[in-house]
Picture 1 (cartoon, helix red, strand yellow):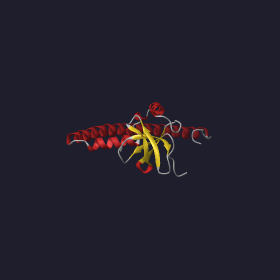
Picture 2 (cartoon, rainbow, N blue to C red):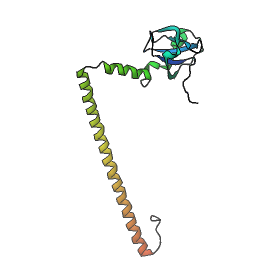
Picture 3 (tube, rainbow, N blue to C red):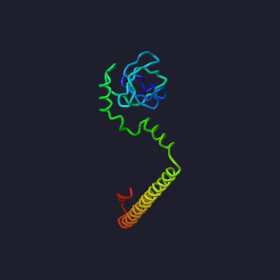
Picture 4 (spheres, one colour):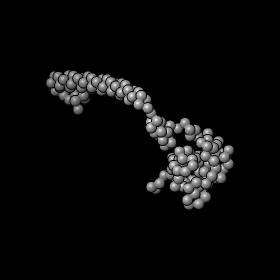
Length: 165
């Protein structure tokens, strides 16, 4: 199936156009092929009909029966803790709005913090890389020592060693 997000009861949607632009809502019922009944009790969207081309469907879906009351939708919203999920689409939109509102000094502080973070990350990576290289060299040195000792045994006993084959 090419599509994974369907217009269905309980689907959380982001309103991209109209009076409640930038807010989240849950689809309560499908009115017809172009409109849906939505409700967003926690985000300030009243129960109303909205065009489907004004909605962006998210990957989240609440579990409640179709045409459920606002009280049921609010309870399902709180139970799923949708406001706390930071990787969702609307969290990215909010981050973009914050980024646009930064002043010159805020951008400077952000750039400096990134530089410090990158230096710490790079030094930790180089430390681990050096340690791995040293461990590999020590392991290789032990292997060479075993091969040398096995060849000496073979010369003395003229039989094969288990380490070599």
